[in-house]
Image (cartoon, rainbow, N blue to C red; front, side, top):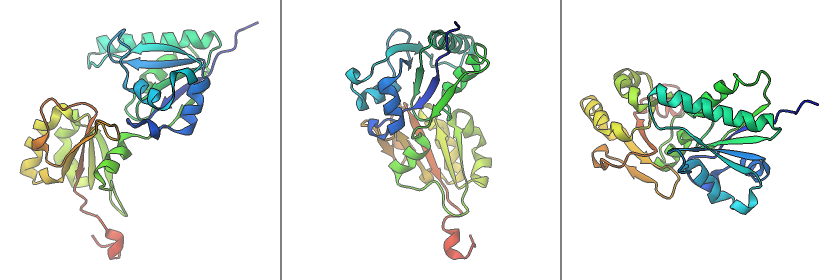
Length: 252
């Protein structure tokens, strides 16, 4: 008799505050056979996503085995791609054993998450895998919740780009969008200042690190951001040239 393949869940656990985890994610993680956990440093079990989960669910309430998967913080595909494939192979072994697996990720699985690479690599192992993606609160909404500045209203437009390449596109983006979210901005602050100052937009930028987490910090002046303050950072650039259009009969 052929062993039935387990079901795979990709679970977004939110941006940092454990109380923002969804009821669905908590329910699944209490009963799942295996929890696949991304770790930053190999063998160190250092996982931001796992710390979020443990803040919401006690270890004793989670029945499943823990499987830590190394996802290196590198842009070198010679390092990252083998790690992604190894992680996919580990998950595949559990699934072939008939175990249901939940891969956890901070934020949402569909937004700049390692899940995208895992999903692609798992297609090499299975042609018909049962997958459920459980959405989570993302930094895209956590950051404006922290700044208390809306992303958009009425006819406004907003975009989301990684700061590492988005900073080069800013002159074009500011002409087309009212709000720009620049993700992973920590190491890009000096460059952002250099680009925004001559555009007269430095005062429109707010820096948020660890949104919703107890370590959350907000800087309304990029020049005040400490040089070593670079983790889980997003800059919200609020130009809002079309703000309130619907209050004025559709006239900007």
